[in-house]
Image (cartoon, rainbow, N blue to C red; front, side):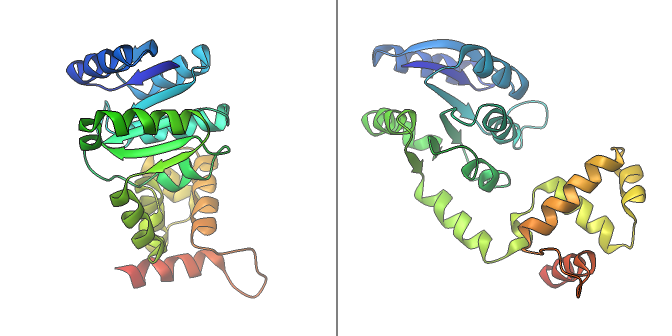
Length: 213
């Protein structure tokens, strides 16, 4: 397989490259941040990309966000996400894009080399491989829809709960009004608030937020 590797740790990148090469795979690009991952995958069109969740500049969920961006631009992309800890802020977005070919494993699974390599083949073939801990986190989060929001969506909703208009939210977060409107639509969708003449979705979203606190 032709593979792109994305991890900000030089040692981990080199270790993965060595492991993959010994298994007969070709690493066609090795990058250290989200934007470089997006560029490399869209240029190389590999059979698979192996992506670390936490990369510069904030080391939170850049890898997941970059993976979501890749799948939006190229729905057929095959992606194996690796993380030291379970980070599910964008996991739903990733799992609902494209047509399979997604994996999300904790990094300690890599120590079981044969299982890890088998998982890569499964994902490259269009299958889905999820770490049991990731599944538990996702299932638990779906019982609390507010927990399913991304950090930025939670910021937007918190400001909405303060009575801010979309324009005021945009000014506070230093983003465009259009960006805030997109966030609010995604918030409504994730909370299951469909257009309804008899209910105000903004009020319902705020009430959901206040209840979760």
